[in-house]
Image 1 (cartoon, rainbow, N blue to C red):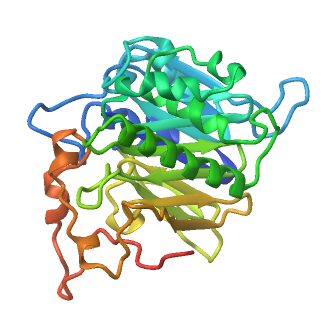
Image 2: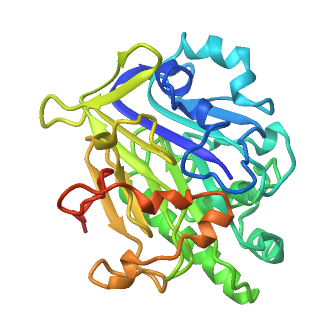
Length: 346
């Protein structure tokens, strides 16, 4: 499967601090992923993409994100390394791909864009060809014609665009993006049910307009675990030791940086918290981070013991979860050494 990372900060970050320099950067995860290892030792070598927004709005350039994609393995692309040390941005999406649907081509590399919007996906839509034509029939012509590739991910993005009143707008409120994301998940589940599909879909989606960010950790199942997703926040993300050893520091109560990733970019266990299964993370323009439950037929409330006993086998088979993830060492109080978020925002 795929890996992605999102950066949003009050100050722009040099792309190399996310993509190339950390010893467990998104590029290194492409060939040495710690939370998606399965018996096949798969790699994310089927292309990559990075998208970013300008630090200062330029009317001549517009507000659309800039996208750089390639079908070469991310760790072997000299142009990416050159660009990463010369570009800074306050909002970055990066994605490394392992093909599950669609051919190996630039058109199928994430992130996907439409106007000011940018979108990525980690996971897969189960038996997507069985209802692809049904989904396409529900799209307005101007959105249908924008799809260039043949992945379930890009068609999911097109579906999301159809849920937004004016997807060509320059900016969107967090509530508009959040509702569009929820409605997209609802529609995909309805299509699957109509087609008689019983296998769960893994929908770790993320969308941004350059100001707000909405990300989901979701699976259409009440008993299976979703693909991994983590977040980190603080005031600085810097290299504290040679060799690409980074950490997130928090010197005060402000959140100057928020990062969301399929897999942590550092080995500092206290830096990262796990996003709850079937929850949506919203980053507001004021750098507030909200974790909101996606309440549907597959939602299991935290008060239900079943919420802590989801089966990891499905995600492990898809290469999206490490079997060892649930076997982390515990402290003297029985608390896992990688923390889980326990405060839920409604």
